[in-house]
Length: 92
Image (tube, rainbow, N blue to C red; front, side, top):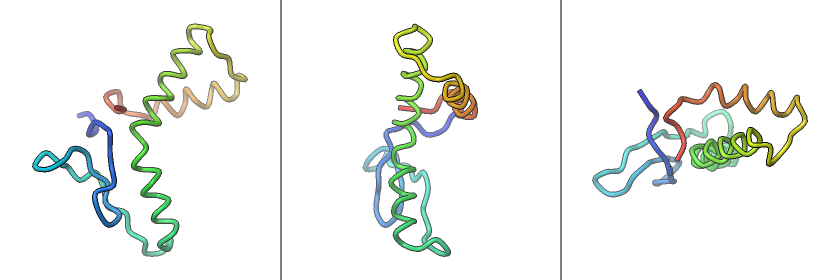
């Protein structure tokens, strides 16, 4: 099963959704209990951007594979490690 495709957007009080109107799907709700309102708001902003960040990271790795961009090996290794954890169908 693939994750819900992006883009994702804020759809109300700490709710992240994909789609609009009758096609809207709630991705998650962020609660502030324990972490506080400011941190919950920051978590919401980060989650909203997840599909776009994954897409751009995949584009960067493609450019590196082509030799157009280089990264220090430890950074490249960490990028590959993180991307390997993402579901194949994820991203916008």
